[in-house]
Image (cartoon, rainbow, N blue to C red; front, side, top):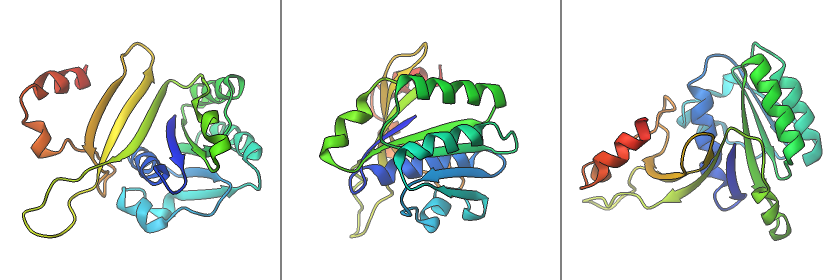
Amino acid sequence: MIKAGVASEFAGCATLFTAGIAARLKGPVLWCLTRRDLFAPGLSRAGLHPDRVIYAEAPRDQDILPLVEEGLHEKGLAAVVGEVTRLDLTASRRLQLAAEGSGVTALIIRRWWTVAEKDLVRLPTAATTRWRIAPAPSEGMPAPGLGCDRWQAELLRCRGAEPRTWIVEACNAKGRLALPADLAHRPGQAAVRGAATR
């Protein structure tokens, strides 16, 4: 499960992080959402070609979870992505069981649209992992210009593991993340890299 913020805040990072995961899987991806705000060139930049994406739009947030669950029963899909605000323990457990039964990867982006909905994305779920993805400052460039996008990827929950935080370069055209070169060679990073590979 990927946790995002308000649409104008961190949702773009979480969406591209999710697209990068889906890009590395073989087959079509079902993307269930209530708003037409996906940017196909952005998905492609993260490695997920838009021709691989099947869009399912529902008018209300509560209609997304049944679409996701139905998609998880289709073994021909690589992944099913659902964008929701509300996700309780029971619904998340149903999705977890459906994903385990079919082998299809389930990715849920929890977005909030109003301040009143902000606390809803903190409710516990049965997800195997929970992540928070946020923008991080880019490396300073020797000449004026934009550096490579960076994210702070925070593992909030993972069965059998401790929470961790990494600064990574955004997904490339193959959906791969990278540890920024200027951060990879800092003193003490060897221990962090070792912990990340365990």
